[in-house]
Image (tube, rainbow, N blue to C red; front, side, top):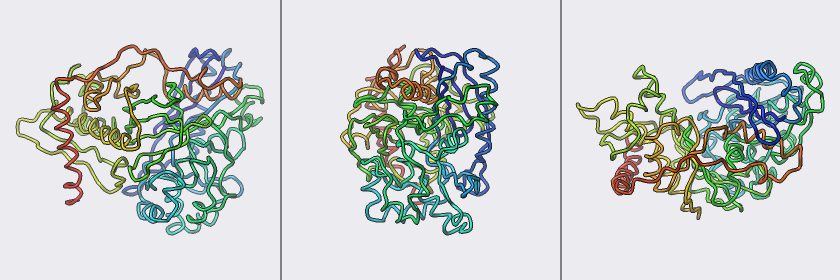
Length: 483
């Protein structure tokens, strides 16, 4: 048996999997995100370990025999978070999360420093780890002076599980300190941001064993102490392992809290100026590129919250088929934007609201705005030489037939819907554990899911949606000018 843990922004999910890939059971636990000031987003790492114990207890109760046979586990986690430990391994302050934008000044400073884009392969976004820690040097110098180790969220959970300070390549590529081509920490990038190599964890590939469970945890969970923990990875890279997106031409679009358009790459071929992320994959000698928008289903949830109705009710009211773009426009910059704008201060907007506008119009405008933002990501991926012929749809938003057909038409590529089953980061993390424990080739374990249905672009409407996208694309500069 193998366990995949997905440390998400709002909760932790555990998936118990047999070596042949059969799903045995799952469990979840939630926790809060704190926003003490505008632009701040923080979490208490103790909440992650408490959630892990809760998930383990539920799996152990529901599947005692299977859980007792656990051989290995892997962890996927939300990226970029700055979890700071002192010399005794104690947490110094709440973790600054991926969507924390307070370090925009520090990010701009690092981004303008020669070598940062070239070595890391990326623009230095405010959400990355390096600018956050540099912000601490200026604003919380007492905390900065005590930093002995900087760990990403899933790496803190691995530290709690094993006592080892490690990180994998895919997650570390999002710190701003990794030479993503060489797959190693960069002494230049560290020194330019006032950090040292000894403050970094040891680097491993995502499927490499980092240690075994600490004896006290193994005892608490009723397991042998030889359960192997592998390096794991950043959530999107591990989700790619869950859907078998390992090779050039493999891609997925994720309609989750944030929106992602990810393409696997056989080579390291960055183009930082495009604001496309170019990161190491969670498996050896592979990379991936992705465009990221900060609010996908979060945009629909925002609308639902303000209309005091469930998001699923809003979505179902649109039916299953698109009929052409809405005149109302929504710009989904509720928390700023990454690809392609790298703008932490821009905020969203609703335009062309008419006295006849309905709740359905608002819902359609939100879905279209998110879809157009994903088209932005597709366009910049194309500029790097990435040629996507089709993509697999995952995430909660992929449950809406209307939204999936909209995305297919706006991107003008077929969108595959996987057959029912598990395809997310929790499965990818379990697959990394299987590879690490069995020495199997990644491709033999990280297979692609069976496609239940392919949604093709509505060819009669592609021109209309392309024109609507061009209007959307022209709106950002105007909004920026008055913001």
